Length: 72
Image 1 (cartoon, rainbow, N blue to C red):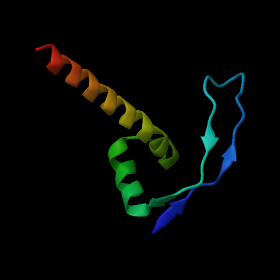
Image 2 (cartoon, rainbow, N blue to C red):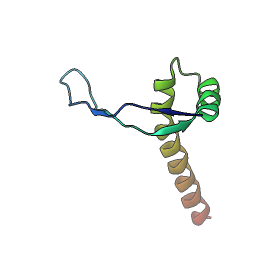
Image 3 (cartoon, rainbow, N blue to C red):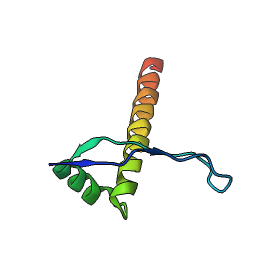
Image 4 (cartoon, helix red, strand yellow):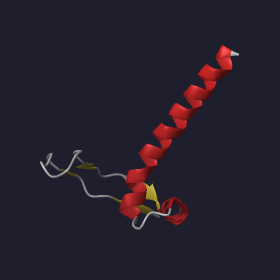
């Protein structure tokens, strides 16, 4: 089973530091449920928003570790 998210573009707001874009895509329901449980986020929307930040942080950490290995 998959979950479809609504598509719309949210324009930048003077009250919000970053702009957001809602995107429509299908997610595996079991994967989303498991991710939600382990994320500690209060909502599934917050969980989905956190995933790209987590991926970026992990990849940046890996690059830094690889650079330190090259220094030795």
